[in-house]
Image (cartoon, rainbow, N blue to C red):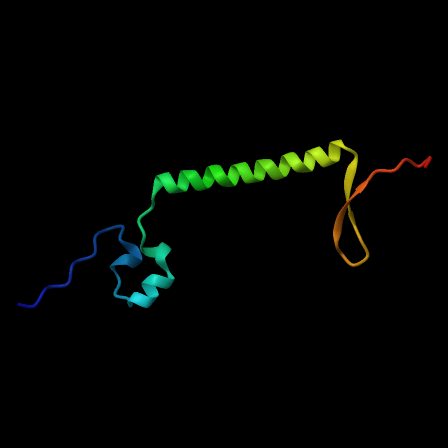
Length: 85
């Protein structure tokens, strides 16, 4: 009794192709089904991260700091100085 190979269903994509277990382990995201809950948590975490970065940047700018580039190409926050000082 030889088993007949399963016909690929529409939408299977690369999952329907023959591959080795090593290829499947290295490229796990190609074979995993999308998970809406995990994706939603990831989007929320990414949004919080970008929001925090924007908040910290606006906080430093509100305190009178600005981004300056040094001679070696490094960026640093420098407090604004009056021309009178």
